[in-house]
Image (cartoon, rainbow, N blue to C red):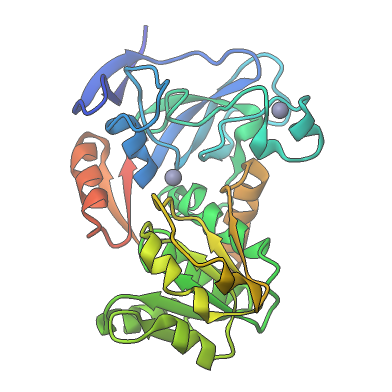
Length: 339
Ligand SMILES: [Zn+2]
Ligand SMILES: [Zn+2]
Protein backbone atom coordinates (compact mmCIF):
# COMPACT_ATOMS: atom_id res chain seq x y z
CA UNK A 1 0.00 0.00 0.00
CA UNK A 2 1.31 3.49 -0.83
CA UNK A 3 2.09 5.59 2.23
CA UNK A 4 1.89 9.24 3.13
CA UNK A 5 3.50 11.43 5.74
CA UNK A 6 1.20 12.94 8.33
CA UNK A 7 1.40 14.81 11.62
CA UNK A 8 -0.85 13.28 14.26
CA UNK A 9 -1.69 13.93 17.90
CA UNK A 10 -2.19 10.66 19.82
CA UNK A 11 -3.69 12.05 23.03
CA UNK A 12 -4.71 15.38 24.53
CA UNK A 13 -1.57 17.40 25.28
CA UNK A 14 0.51 14.82 23.44
CA UNK A 15 3.24 15.90 20.99
CA UNK A 16 2.90 16.30 17.24
CA UNK A 17 4.17 13.00 15.78
CA UNK A 18 5.37 12.61 12.21
CA UNK A 19 4.01 9.22 11.10
CA UNK A 20 3.61 7.17 7.96
CA UNK A 21 0.08 6.12 7.19
CA UNK A 22 -1.61 4.37 4.31
CA UNK A 23 -3.03 6.84 1.81
CA UNK A 24 -6.80 6.75 2.52
CA UNK A 25 -9.41 5.86 -0.11
CA UNK A 26 -12.48 8.09 -0.54
CA UNK A 27 -15.86 6.55 0.30
CA UNK A 28 -19.27 7.49 -1.11
CA UNK A 29 -19.78 11.25 -1.36
CA UNK A 30 -16.11 12.02 -0.64
CA UNK A 31 -12.93 12.88 -2.51
CA UNK A 32 -9.26 12.52 -1.71
CA UNK A 33 -7.23 15.73 -1.71
CA UNK A 34 -3.51 15.76 -2.45
CA UNK A 35 -2.64 18.51 0.03
CA UNK A 36 -0.32 21.35 -0.91
CA UNK A 37 -0.75 23.73 2.04
CA UNK A 38 -2.56 23.87 5.37
CA UNK A 39 -2.81 26.88 7.65
CA UNK A 40 -2.31 26.55 11.40
CA UNK A 41 -5.28 27.99 13.28
CA UNK A 42 -5.68 28.68 16.98
CA UNK A 43 -8.60 26.22 16.97
CA UNK A 44 -6.11 23.42 16.20
CA UNK A 45 -5.34 23.66 19.92
CA UNK A 46 -8.70 21.91 20.52
CA UNK A 47 -7.05 18.76 19.13
CA UNK A 48 -3.57 19.39 20.49
CA UNK A 49 -4.58 20.34 24.03
CA UNK A 50 -7.83 18.33 24.18
CA UNK A 51 -10.19 21.28 24.50
CA UNK A 52 -13.21 19.56 22.98
CA UNK A 53 -14.81 16.37 24.35
CA UNK A 54 -15.41 13.50 21.94
CA UNK A 55 -12.35 13.86 19.69
CA UNK A 56 -11.14 10.39 18.65
CA UNK A 57 -7.34 10.06 18.85
CA UNK A 58 -4.98 9.74 17.13
CA UNK A 59 -6.13 12.72 15.08
CA UNK A 60 -4.52 14.70 12.25
CA UNK A 61 -5.40 18.39 12.80
CA UNK A 62 -5.79 21.15 10.22
CA UNK A 63 -8.79 22.93 8.68
CA UNK A 64 -7.24 25.49 6.31
CA UNK A 65 -6.50 23.07 3.49
CA UNK A 66 -5.65 23.67 -0.16
CA UNK A 67 -4.73 20.97 -2.65
CA UNK A 68 -5.70 19.02 -5.75
CA UNK A 69 -8.56 16.54 -6.02
CA UNK A 70 -6.72 13.27 -6.47
CA UNK A 71 -9.44 10.58 -6.35
CA UNK A 72 -13.24 10.76 -6.37
CA UNK A 73 -15.50 8.36 -4.46
CA UNK A 74 -18.84 6.94 -5.66
CA UNK A 75 -21.77 9.34 -5.98
CA UNK A 76 -19.77 12.56 -6.25
CA UNK A 77 -21.01 15.07 -8.84
CA UNK A 78 -19.16 18.21 -9.89
CA UNK A 79 -15.60 17.23 -9.01
CA UNK A 80 -12.95 15.35 -10.91
CA UNK A 81 -9.27 14.57 -10.37
CA UNK A 82 -6.91 17.44 -11.12
CA UNK A 83 -9.15 20.26 -9.90
CA UNK A 84 -7.90 22.60 -7.20
CA UNK A 85 -9.95 22.42 -4.00
CA UNK A 86 -9.99 23.85 -0.51
CA UNK A 87 -11.72 22.83 2.71
CA UNK A 88 -12.19 24.77 5.93
CA UNK A 89 -13.78 24.28 9.37
CA UNK A 90 -17.12 23.05 8.01
CA UNK A 91 -16.61 19.42 7.07
CA UNK A 92 -19.99 18.88 5.41
CA UNK A 93 -23.73 18.71 6.05
CA UNK A 94 -26.63 16.35 5.38
CA UNK A 95 -28.86 18.45 3.12
CA UNK A 96 -32.10 16.96 4.50
CA UNK A 97 -32.48 18.15 8.12
CA UNK A 98 -34.59 21.18 9.03
CA UNK A 99 -31.64 23.56 9.27
CA UNK A 100 -30.19 22.43 5.94
CA UNK A 101 -33.57 22.73 4.19
CA UNK A 102 -33.82 26.30 5.49
CA UNK A 103 -30.44 27.01 3.96
CA UNK A 104 -28.63 27.10 7.30
CA UNK A 105 -26.19 24.37 6.29
CA UNK A 106 -23.64 25.51 8.86
CA UNK A 107 -26.08 24.47 11.61
CA UNK A 108 -26.79 20.99 10.23
CA UNK A 109 -28.70 19.09 12.92
CA UNK A 110 -27.86 15.52 11.98
CA UNK A 111 -24.09 15.70 12.08
CA UNK A 112 -21.43 18.10 13.21
CA UNK A 113 -18.56 17.52 10.81
CA UNK A 114 -15.47 19.59 11.57
CA UNK A 115 -12.37 19.19 9.43
CA UNK A 116 -9.37 18.09 11.46
CA UNK A 117 -11.48 17.50 14.59
CA UNK A 118 -14.19 14.94 13.82
CA UNK A 119 -12.13 13.60 10.90
CA UNK A 120 -8.47 13.80 9.89
CA UNK A 121 -7.41 17.16 8.50
CA UNK A 122 -4.69 18.90 6.58
CA UNK A 123 -1.42 18.33 8.48
CA UNK A 124 -0.69 15.55 5.99
CA UNK A 125 0.06 14.79 2.35
CA UNK A 126 -3.48 13.51 1.67
CA UNK A 127 -6.90 13.70 3.31
CA UNK A 128 -10.48 12.65 2.65
CA UNK A 129 -13.10 15.38 2.34
CA UNK A 130 -16.84 15.34 1.75
CA UNK A 131 -17.65 16.78 -1.67
CA UNK A 132 -20.22 19.33 -0.42
CA UNK A 133 -17.53 20.84 1.83
CA UNK A 134 -15.16 21.66 -1.06
CA UNK A 135 -14.49 25.15 -2.42
CA UNK A 136 -13.10 25.95 -5.86
CA UNK A 137 -9.73 27.73 -5.77
CA UNK A 138 -8.98 30.43 -8.37
CA UNK A 139 -5.71 30.24 -10.31
CA UNK A 140 -4.65 33.72 -9.13
CA UNK A 141 -4.03 32.41 -5.60
CA UNK A 142 -1.12 30.17 -4.64
CA UNK A 143 -1.86 27.32 -2.24
CA UNK A 144 -0.02 29.12 0.57
CA UNK A 145 -1.96 32.34 -0.07
CA UNK A 146 -5.30 30.54 -0.24
CA UNK A 147 -4.91 28.31 2.84
CA UNK A 148 -5.51 30.90 5.60
CA UNK A 149 -8.49 32.24 3.67
CA UNK A 150 -10.26 28.93 4.42
CA UNK A 151 -10.73 29.86 8.10
CA UNK A 152 -9.30 33.25 9.07
CA UNK A 153 -10.38 34.67 5.71
CA UNK A 154 -13.90 33.28 5.43
CA UNK A 155 -14.59 34.17 9.06
CA UNK A 156 -13.80 37.86 8.57
CA UNK A 157 -15.09 38.24 4.99
CA UNK A 158 -18.34 36.37 5.50
CA UNK A 159 -19.16 38.09 8.79
CA UNK A 160 -18.46 41.54 7.35
CA UNK A 161 -20.45 41.01 4.16
CA UNK A 162 -23.44 39.81 6.19
CA UNK A 163 -23.09 42.48 8.89
CA UNK A 164 -25.59 44.93 7.43
CA UNK A 165 -22.93 47.65 7.12
CA UNK A 166 -23.08 49.55 3.84
CA UNK A 167 -20.29 51.05 1.76
CA UNK A 168 -19.11 54.33 3.25
CA UNK A 169 -20.06 53.43 6.82
CA UNK A 170 -17.58 53.15 9.68
CA UNK A 171 -16.58 49.54 10.36
CA UNK A 172 -13.95 48.88 12.99
CA UNK A 173 -11.82 45.76 13.30
CA UNK A 174 -10.68 45.05 16.84
CA UNK A 175 -7.36 43.21 16.85
CA UNK A 176 -4.63 43.05 14.20
CA UNK A 177 -3.54 39.41 14.30
CA UNK A 178 -4.26 36.41 12.08
CA UNK A 179 -7.93 37.34 11.67
CA UNK A 180 -7.65 41.08 12.10
CA UNK A 181 -5.02 41.67 9.40
CA UNK A 182 -7.43 40.06 6.93
CA UNK A 183 -10.48 41.78 8.45
CA UNK A 184 -8.99 45.22 7.86
CA UNK A 185 -8.22 44.38 4.23
CA UNK A 186 -11.71 43.01 3.62
CA UNK A 187 -13.38 45.97 5.36
CA UNK A 188 -11.44 48.39 3.16
CA UNK A 189 -12.09 46.46 -0.07
CA UNK A 190 -15.81 46.13 0.78
CA UNK A 191 -15.97 49.91 0.73
CA UNK A 192 -16.26 50.63 4.44
CA UNK A 193 -14.40 53.31 6.34
CA UNK A 194 -12.14 50.70 7.93
CA UNK A 195 -10.88 51.53 11.41
CA UNK A 196 -8.19 49.28 12.85
CA UNK A 197 -7.95 49.03 16.64
CA UNK A 198 -4.88 47.43 18.20
CA UNK A 199 -2.42 47.94 21.05
CA UNK A 200 0.59 50.16 20.37
CA UNK A 201 1.40 53.05 18.05
CA UNK A 202 3.92 50.87 16.21
CA UNK A 203 1.09 48.98 14.45
CA UNK A 204 -0.28 52.09 12.72
CA UNK A 205 1.88 51.83 9.54
CA UNK A 206 0.86 48.18 9.13
CA UNK A 207 -2.82 49.05 9.60
CA UNK A 208 -2.58 51.81 7.02
CA UNK A 209 -0.77 49.53 4.56
CA UNK A 210 -3.65 47.05 4.91
CA UNK A 211 -6.09 49.76 3.88
CA UNK A 212 -7.23 51.17 7.23
CA UNK A 213 -8.81 54.63 6.99
CA UNK A 214 -8.02 55.36 10.64
CA UNK A 215 -5.97 53.65 13.34
CA UNK A 216 -6.78 53.65 17.06
CA UNK A 217 -4.09 52.71 19.58
CA UNK A 218 -6.14 51.19 22.41
CA UNK A 219 -3.16 51.41 24.78
CA UNK A 220 -2.88 55.19 24.51
CA UNK A 221 -6.47 56.08 23.59
CA UNK A 222 -10.01 55.15 24.70
CA UNK A 223 -11.23 53.23 21.62
CA UNK A 224 -14.92 53.92 22.42
CA UNK A 225 -14.32 57.66 22.62
CA UNK A 226 -12.25 57.68 19.43
CA UNK A 227 -14.92 55.74 17.52
CA UNK A 228 -17.57 58.15 18.80
CA UNK A 229 -15.55 61.05 17.40
CA UNK A 230 -15.78 59.34 14.00
CA UNK A 231 -19.58 59.22 14.34
CA UNK A 232 -19.75 55.77 15.90
CA UNK A 233 -19.19 52.41 14.25
CA UNK A 234 -21.92 50.61 12.36
CA UNK A 235 -20.06 47.41 13.12
CA UNK A 236 -17.12 46.50 15.30
CA UNK A 237 -15.71 43.13 14.23
CA UNK A 238 -14.15 41.66 17.38
CA UNK A 239 -11.33 39.30 16.40
CA UNK A 240 -9.59 39.34 19.79
CA UNK A 241 -10.09 36.66 22.44
CA UNK A 242 -10.19 39.09 25.40
CA UNK A 243 -13.67 39.94 26.65
CA UNK A 244 -12.53 43.13 28.38
CA UNK A 245 -11.14 44.48 25.09
CA UNK A 246 -14.53 43.84 23.49
CA UNK A 247 -16.39 45.54 26.34
CA UNK A 248 -14.11 48.57 25.98
CA UNK A 249 -15.33 49.32 22.43
CA UNK A 250 -19.08 48.95 23.07
CA UNK A 251 -19.45 52.65 23.77
CA UNK A 252 -18.07 53.36 20.30
CA UNK A 253 -20.99 51.81 18.45
CA UNK A 254 -23.15 54.17 16.42
CA UNK A 255 -26.95 54.08 16.32
CA UNK A 256 -28.13 50.53 15.56
CA UNK A 257 -24.49 49.45 15.72
CA UNK A 258 -23.43 45.84 16.18
CA UNK A 259 -20.56 44.24 18.05
CA UNK A 260 -19.86 41.30 15.75
CA UNK A 261 -17.98 38.63 17.69
CA UNK A 262 -15.73 36.10 15.94
CA UNK A 263 -13.08 35.78 18.66
CA UNK A 264 -13.76 32.93 21.10
CA UNK A 265 -13.39 34.90 24.35
CA UNK A 266 -14.17 33.01 27.56
CA UNK A 267 -16.47 35.70 28.94
CA UNK A 268 -17.82 39.18 28.23
CA UNK A 269 -19.04 41.49 30.97
CA UNK A 270 -21.19 44.46 30.07
CA UNK A 271 -24.03 46.55 31.38
CA UNK A 272 -27.17 45.76 29.34
CA UNK A 273 -28.17 49.39 29.88
CA UNK A 274 -25.36 50.28 27.46
CA UNK A 275 -27.26 48.56 24.67
CA UNK A 276 -30.57 50.38 25.04
CA UNK A 277 -30.10 54.01 24.06
CA UNK A 278 -28.39 53.32 20.73
CA UNK A 279 -30.27 50.05 20.04
CA UNK A 280 -26.95 48.25 19.97
CA UNK A 281 -26.65 44.54 19.45
CA UNK A 282 -24.10 41.84 20.02
CA UNK A 283 -23.97 39.05 17.49
CA UNK A 284 -21.81 35.98 17.00
CA UNK A 285 -20.81 34.61 13.63
CA UNK A 286 -20.01 31.10 12.36
CA UNK A 287 -17.33 31.15 9.66
CA UNK A 288 -19.42 29.66 6.83
CA UNK A 289 -19.73 26.75 4.46
CA UNK A 290 -18.01 25.82 1.21
CA UNK A 291 -19.76 28.37 -1.00
CA UNK A 292 -18.76 31.11 1.45
CA UNK A 293 -15.16 29.90 1.24
CA UNK A 294 -15.38 29.94 -2.53
CA UNK A 295 -16.73 33.52 -2.43
CA UNK A 296 -13.92 34.52 -0.03
CA UNK A 297 -11.28 33.13 -2.39
CA UNK A 298 -12.87 34.74 -5.45
CA UNK A 299 -13.19 38.14 -3.73
CA UNK A 300 -9.57 37.95 -2.57
CA UNK A 301 -8.38 37.07 -6.07
CA UNK A 302 -10.43 39.97 -7.47
CA UNK A 303 -9.41 42.67 -5.00
CA UNK A 304 -5.88 41.70 -3.98
CA UNK A 305 -6.61 40.73 -0.37
CA UNK A 306 -3.86 38.36 0.74
CA UNK A 307 -2.83 36.87 4.08
CA UNK A 308 0.69 37.55 5.34
CA UNK A 309 2.20 34.16 6.09
CA UNK A 310 5.12 32.45 7.75
CA UNK A 311 5.70 29.17 5.95
CA UNK A 312 6.85 25.91 7.57
CA UNK A 313 7.43 22.51 5.99
CA UNK A 314 5.16 19.71 7.27
CA UNK A 315 7.85 18.21 9.51
CA UNK A 316 8.18 21.60 11.27
CA UNK A 317 4.50 21.56 12.34
CA UNK A 318 5.37 21.77 16.04
CA UNK A 319 7.50 24.86 15.42
CA UNK A 320 4.76 26.51 13.36
CA UNK A 321 2.17 25.71 16.03
CA UNK A 322 4.34 27.21 18.80
CA UNK A 323 4.85 30.28 16.67
CA UNK A 324 1.08 30.63 16.24
CA UNK A 325 0.43 30.10 19.98
CA UNK A 326 3.07 32.68 20.92
CA UNK A 327 1.08 35.35 19.09
CA UNK A 328 4.31 36.42 17.36
CA UNK A 329 3.53 34.93 13.93
CA UNK A 330 3.22 37.65 11.27
CA UNK A 331 0.42 36.84 10.77
CA UNK A 332 -0.57 33.32 9.84
CA UNK A 333 1.55 30.14 9.98
CA UNK A 334 1.14 27.81 7.00
CA UNK A 335 2.44 24.25 6.47
CA UNK A 336 3.52 23.04 3.05
CA UNK A 337 3.83 19.39 1.99
CA UNK A 338 5.95 19.76 -1.13
CA UNK A 339 3.09 18.27 -3.23
ZN1 LIG B 1 -9.72 28.02 12.25
ZN1 LIG C 1 -28.43 18.90 7.87
